[in-house]
Length: 84
Image (cartoon, rainbow, N blue to C red; front, side):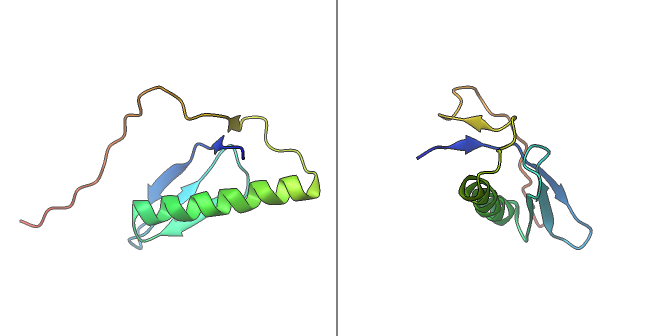
């Protein structure tokens, strides 16, 4: 089993949902109610795109990282809503 690390961008939409896309994996578009749901959907979409490429003998994008998870630190900002 291989593991691919795919960078995604997540943006907040005016409708109150989140949209994930990838500059590396063309066709990856995922929308969800929360960031976690959007990431989960993006993972599923990415898996289906990669499996389809492999099944049909299509080339995978050159920028896909294959292998172990990086040992570097990941810095992100999280949105924490608080009612006051």
